[in-house]
Image (cartoon, rainbow, N blue to C red; front, side, top):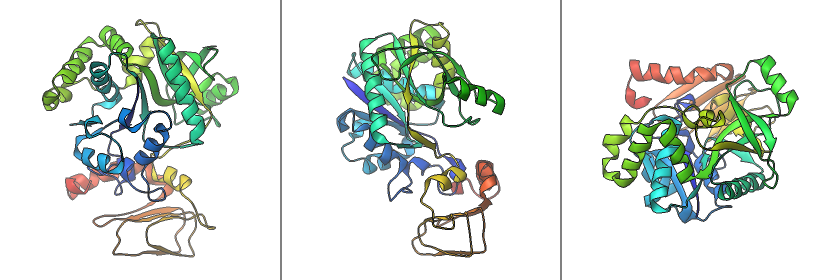
Length: 358
């Protein structure tokens, strides 16, 4: 049977004070009153019914996840007691699903992006399911067809094309974030895609690769699936590493028993990982201001202005290219150009004022 796991962990401190521990960015209703998690859920329901959707998220906000997603079964929320990077966010659900259904074919999708058109995404996910069903030895990943020589994304190197599965091709290598010259070479070649960090595989196939590459992790996630009451004991001891580094890269190099294929996503793909990125994707007025909540603007251009306090107004005059965020207990003002530094600022607030505010 087919399943989809939405990976919705992390606290998103680059969007502090909007997102913080216990209130991650995936749950914030910033997009016409809907959250990134709700938009991700809507997308996957085009491919599987609600009962076959799982969410891997932080245990602290598992209850809110259930409240936001109608039809999601409470037993399908896997709450991590602490973040242990992306490998464990895919390996633990794979072990859980393999125990429930030995023939499970699982898509792992993220909840960090805005994706349009949704139909193109659903078509690619469908092709991934077909490929993983037909070939029990494949790990399918997805690559976004690049529109610019972006230096902020990792890349997939494509090998031979695979007929019958849309734009699928074998993957020969994973490339880290390149410099500008290398990114331009990737774009010109037409054989590199941005690494979307989403996957489809048979749960058993992923676990087989883990048994070869990381046998201790393999043993521990199987133990977790068998003894969920020991989550708090076992999960914090899992090796903290990414799925690309732990599995996808070595498999693409022939170090295990499977092989890696990629399916192209010809979509608009916006990773909402900073206030500058959020400003780009939100609707803007004629002066380039993006506004959320009760905000009044005069003689200001190019700003991101967010007010989540229903009992107050955020009013600005003479501001340009800034981000101003007001919440009930914290206010942020910064240039959009400096928005990548917000994470370190949140850590400074935690150290100098209170961890509860970060």
